[in-house]
Length: 603
Image (cartoon, rainbow, N blue to C red; front, top):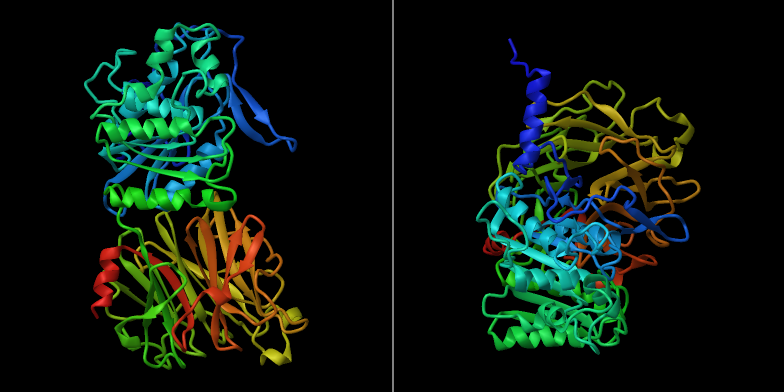
């Protein structure tokens, strides 16, 4: 008999969870959790309620009148290790929180480089809801660090690698925490340190001194007629010592809201106290450029990533591996590598890493490799032009491979002609793998069948598995109303993105399109406009490089590879900027750690 928890027990359990600040799986990814069980120094005011700031389209771009501090959780893949974490303090002059541009979007970027991020919705200083508004934000920042350390095991965090980040006034709060982490501003009831291990300050307010401060931030935090003692206390450049956390700073010289001298003075104070620090000053960019807009300020996230890596806060920069086949796929798996995603070089002198052994024709075409939730590399491939199944193998290092297996995914379909270009996507929420491929089933979708394609008329089908031993019944995944092949699906932002080839011959398409879905298994939208140019393209594969999505594809009629990069203005063709080994055919790209790439280079 299964154990049952009665209603009273459930209530008691939830109360204990909230009281002790334990964050179990009750708090799912990207959910906001309350920072406090009881907010210190709070004044209850029923009339004072949180308000949104809306843009001209009615979209919420900021938050005012915060009364309930929260942390929004963005956990990175832990890959069986404990991650660095960063608490993000959005800016807004201590009167507003720019929670999207300087919060959620930044957190998603951190996730992409393997850092768990927590967006802090801190209380904005107000005499209406705080007994002492000058310490309210600091109380929230101290508690945020302590919450992360208390729950480090639950969230797979390294408790010795907890950082604070802030933009503009949020940068002042981050610098205040970095220099006032030991201030006794509330009773923490434990001995957990509130000292961050590092800080990242982007166009930060540092000083409260006239002539350098941001007056709006100063007035919001300290009031209009503040004392010289408070000005000195919250001029953080005056409080740096040898125990102040190491820092990364970025600022634009032409910032008219928060003078660049804020960052310069803080940098000088750190340098004088021999605290490791790095500063990037840009010629232009003004104030509030977030992750970067135009010019050189766009480069600060990449510089920050390198700084994190050089300080041992994240693994050294990833390399890239490309799996591909040559000729007809007879000799098997080929791999190439790149340091930057643009110039690709062969591995193992362009000889095969794995010779095909399964399937009707024993080919290894269209090899797709992903790193799964179990830390292993899983590969599927096309075994034949006419078989009803696909090949599968796994590896720990991309060098030594398991016994090859044949998965008969279309064996139940009497009229299935083929199973081509299989791919795998791992769904973290369900802990399942989806394998999907293109097949033509004779007699289906006759409205799009053409003689010019020799009767091939593909749709995308799929199965799911947790262990590559048991598989769900094959189902139709994507029917866009045209002949479709070569689908690859990635998790991006809040949903899934499918890059696909429109195989239509009349009128000619033969290009790469994009479809979207909230769930991995669909439904997906109909493919939109082509993202490729006036050439035939197939076999798309995508990866994020320096914050931008890059899609590679086989220009198969030209016998070379091409690529496009997603920008704020649409898709930019960068085919002339990339180079692949001669003879590269339909493959997939994946990130690998530096140590793994080093071993591959030795082969």
